[in-house]
Image (cartoon, rainbow over all chains, first blue to last red; front, side, top):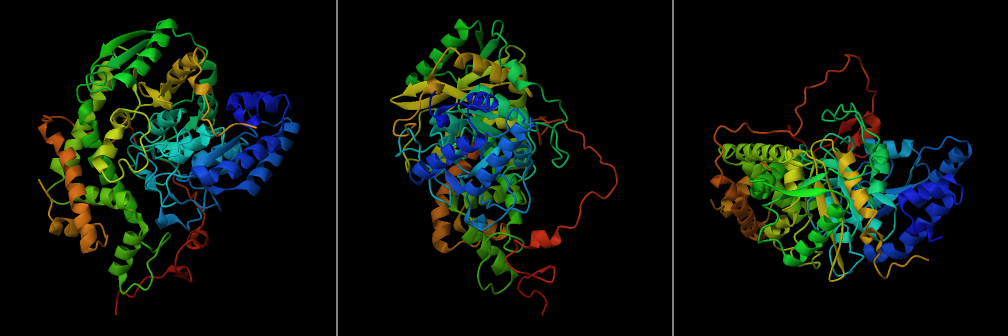
Length: 489
Length: 95
């Protein structure tokens, strides 16, 4: 048998069910790997070792009593944007560097109730604003495939932790690509569910009409198992969907004959890097060998998704982040002379550059006289983008594209050029604007660095996306490659 | 449309962000580059298009009108930077 930490979540499940291993052994194995590799990778902000061991012992007891759920005793780690009761929840910011959440996020509660073991909290771009994880107050996360490169962002800690096998699975969030882009750059599988599929209760808000919680794991099968745990209606999130949750795992086996994959002409034009195109073509060839067909579709307004996103997301952020005032929680400036000084200095000291930039852009876009030119215009473009997708899905089941324009870039390469950084998300933001589910899955390697392909589906088609990706993983082994230097022992 | 330093200072005031002169200068070019990207939108014809605020066509769900929340004041104030006798402390606003 291979090392415990090399197993997928599905394989761990089998091993736990057959009592080949205990949750305590699995948890110890992961905590040891975290201790050995996290100093180099910086994927975890907080490791909750003692709590994890207590949860693992409890999980083993539940299993012995015949009360285990399918994920009892399986370790998970949470992006540090999900509130965890009595544990530090920083959102990657100095503003919340000392914030101990008074309650658990819905997603965290669901994982705990199912008996999963929480290993700790994962690094991220501050307030989920970034595509490289360089915007964290707690320092950049490294890509285990090349320590001089970024893992992507904002869920960079989640992606690196899974890629380096510091956890079998991690929660993550996606506002404009923050699950899919880091999954692509680290050779992992990531799923951003439909807006409303997973409760946002206890997720620290960035852009509320776009934010969605999801997962990063090694395989589509692992995503299916864990999505079953976190999906579903929650009355505490007014935008949580009242839609039944299907059985994601049993849908994985559906053959792909008859599946039509749409290839957007706008994504497969001359601007697509030829090396990336050949990677995506090899994925398309495999899908065709499994019985799927492809056809060209049009998304005429997709090029306008980035400008519209960089109005809507900052506008919502400027409103959401007004709650950080130095009064009720978070960073407070010392010796304020008056209330205005308290607000201004607490916020200036607590927020990093990118967060300040987005608050300024959002405040400007919403300020008197500019609303129609910016926010309303962006919302109209959002409607046009949603209509594009509706029309495309009349001709295909899922849309296939690259996840990112290229493989992981070097740390520092784009950190002083916000516009270049924003264009990282060129293939992913439209999905968020339309509220659709999207996944990124392994598409092989370019010069030794992993790249991903993206599947986007109609609302609530997570089962179909995971089914297609799982079938592809059953005839490829890109998802089974591990970064050198992080060998399993 | 290009912003000048006074615009940034005005917006920063609205956002309750204190920026030094150096920070304002450093921010100016970057914000103008971002606004340049955003201004691509202006070339799109959106006449008569209904703005989309939200991806789901949701109806507000009403809950039963009964008390469900218990008192969490002490717990929530335990993470406040300055609180006393159940009150949040701020600099004096009324002389």
